[in-house]
Length: 230
Length: 406
View (cartoon, rainbow over the protein chains, first blue to last red):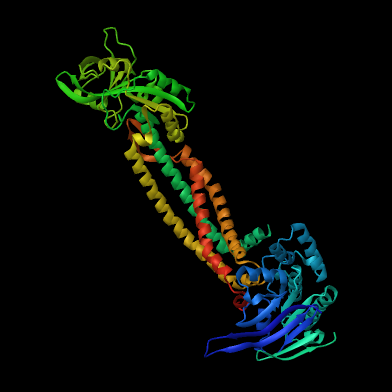
């Protein structure tokens, strides 16, 4: 299998000398293409910090994050923005859709950033909406959608840029059990049909059950890294 | 298009706040446009007053006659000059003049006067001289049956020498050839009033004045009226190129003191309006900053999904400019009838203003491209400036921090 992203000896701490908290310590992982990975662990174990570092939302204090042999830890400003736009899809716990845009426009926006022509954008938006089962709801604003529907739009938005990897930070935490399962089924299907790579940070057992790999974090260190049959 | 949609919808997000901000910008625009209109209109009237009273839009002299007038500094190649003037499409009318100080006698009284020789036919096309006749009749170029030429005198001369229509006036001066010039003229009309520029003037027909001052066919000045008064400096420059041996001066040079005072006054007015606009835009800055602050998380998301810092700045810029555009649009619509009314009807003054014997009863504005576009650019410029600090703030939001904010 091909490695999509690789971290080597990743360290991140917060605070100053007196109040220093080691959020991540020497974390080295390699995420393979098509993996459905869940990073699990108690609160404060460093799950979100790891996702932020992999996604280029934060910079490590030391260590390497490599994507196609490029160390994203060295990137800054515009380079990092372009990296996130073209290589990473994000799904957030609280959906974080742009409230003034409709579902379709939220999906379209990232393609606009990529400079995709209008006609292609329109076709892909239709395809994405269909993929997440929201064919008829493209015109609705986020406030007119349920939590589950919003998170499906977020999944479609994350997919729209054709990223190398999708990072999902507690994507089911704000959803009821049924809606969470339904959303997971959508993501699992995308993973299986499109070979899309997903990394979750989660406490949700439903995700853990469906994950092909579980990375256990504790106090910023990898406690266990297990692969399992889906 | 999507970016424009986002900007527009973001404006509508906080309708009441956007409305208040927009209203303040619209108010600022209308105030500026109205003020510019009044200033331009008032100065336009004053400029018309003296350019059409005596200055003309352009004057032509020999050497520096304007600063140091001497009787011998004359324009002698008049035919060639008039051919140039007649062939210039921008020149609508011109009139030759001669000038000389003189001593006037009537009975036992004397008075210093200024002899002004004008072309009887051409002068009314260049100045309001014919309209300024208060008593008597506008003169003609020919002497009366007794061989005397008619003279038109200013109200000051008429009062000092106690002259009436038909009385004789004796003028004594120096001829251009050094001889003593003296002659008798018959009062044909009294022009202007005691405040007029020519209250101490004695107008003579050009031929009579040239004969009196031994000038031959020479003159001291050509006053020119151009088709478009705003182009007078450009026309003057063209004429200057065509007649390098003479000095062609736009009215801005002829009335340099007034022109500088007017410019200073306009700058003062612009400064005052600048302060008003500044106050308006402190409010606008506050609104945009508030909007950025409220949307910290959203900007964090936009940054997280790959928006470049410049794109965020662009978004804030566009929102501010869009609000400014809508406000200015409404401002233009509202100010058109207001400025039209001020331009064509005007504000009735409690007391009419008398300028050189011509009464102005209304304070009028000006309806011009300048009046509408200057405040427009001011508003857009200030909008662009105030959008920068919030834009920079939004662009440098760290996604990691913003995603944790509420």
